[in-house]
Each structure stands twice: as structure tokens, then as C-alpha cells.
Amino acid sequence: QVELVESGGGSVQAGGSLNLSCATSRYTTSSKCMGWFRQGPGKEREGVAVIYTGGTIVSYADSVEGRFTISRDNKDTVYLQMNDLKPEDTAMYYCGGRVGIMGYECSLAAMREKTYWGQGTQVTVSS
Image 1 (cartoon, rainbow, N blue to C red):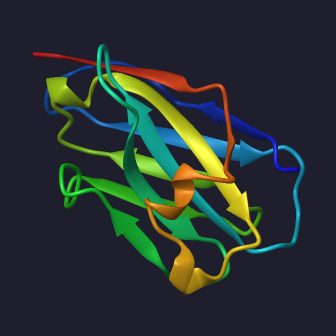
Image 2: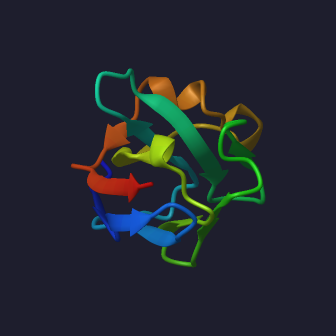
């Protein structure tokens, strides 16, 4: 089982930046598909970005492409650098991890099942 702890959320003005972190409290050597989803007020949870810890595969939602960057370190802590934030980015951001998956299978769609989730960190962007 993978336990995930998010941090780095907060309140910023439009155009600002935040860097979210997701620490794996029970580190495993298994390659994982890890990513960020978000859920805004009155909205469904949507995928933001994913990364495969065993390689270089990354993928982004169209709404954040070019503004957000997902990355990881050698302890499988996953980061989400968010630049040029917009009010519509306001949401609870959740980190997820899925083990037992190959790199070519790692995608936002794949993260919608068999995924462990953290408690979330709130991001609020004011205009």
C-alpha cells in the first residue's frame, strides 16, 4: 500500500505560482504511476498531470499544459509546479499513486481506478 501526503497549497493572486509536493510515506521501489487530480467547488474531480516514476512519461490536461510542470525526485516525492495561476485553478488538489502498472499504461485515465489518494491540499486563486 502507498501512503501519500500532500503539501504546498495556499492562496495566491491570479498570475502567481505555487509548488505542491506529494511525499510517499511508505517508500517502495516499485515503479508507480503518480499524478495530481483536482476538484473545484461544485465540480467533478478532474485529472491534472501524471508521471511514471520508472521512466520519463508525463502527461497533462489541456487546461494546464504549458503552465504546470510535474516532476519527481529519487524518493518518489512528486511535485507540481503551478505557474500563471488562474481563478479557475481554485480546487482541492489530490495526489494519487497506482502501482503495478507499466509506463505506457500510465495516464490520467488509468489513475481513475486502483489508485491510492492523499488527503488533499487546497489551492485558492483570487482575481
